[in-house]
Image (cartoon, rainbow, N blue to C red; front, side, top):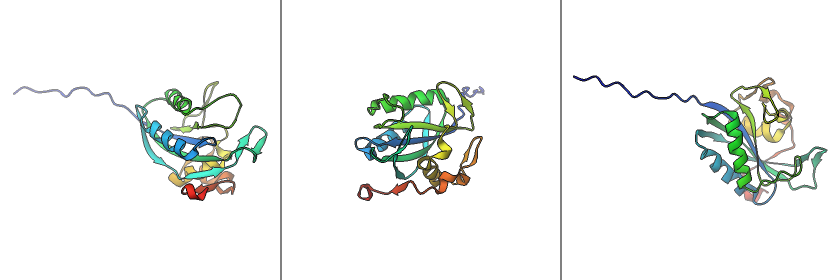
Length: 180
């Protein structure tokens, strides 16, 4: 009898990432739905869960801008076999396909996708800071994140549920188009 050796397989270890999505221009809900599908189609990325939508006021470098269109936001948990830089490239390409314009810092946009956390990585360079440097302050990130991961921890900070933004009343959960 001939012994058949199994073909060697390359083990791909996936890492968990937290992504925050936002849109305040155009058909915000349709854009976010399409972005979720696009993220799920990235080779090496698997969507674990997606939060409900929340609505929040626009935040600019000078603070809250109530004159700007409000944002719809969501948070996603994904598993990724690609690294954070490759994931950043992929989500930036998705933003571009959805008409993202980068002329004004924190300007109005059709789509914004931020990597909030990537498998506990802590780093800061010119291209990517992990965890996201303002995530802990943003109710539109913290509250939907807790909805899909009540035990979430922000690397270097601690439990997300303990953050002041977790109970901030500045966001409103949106269940359907009639709620807007």
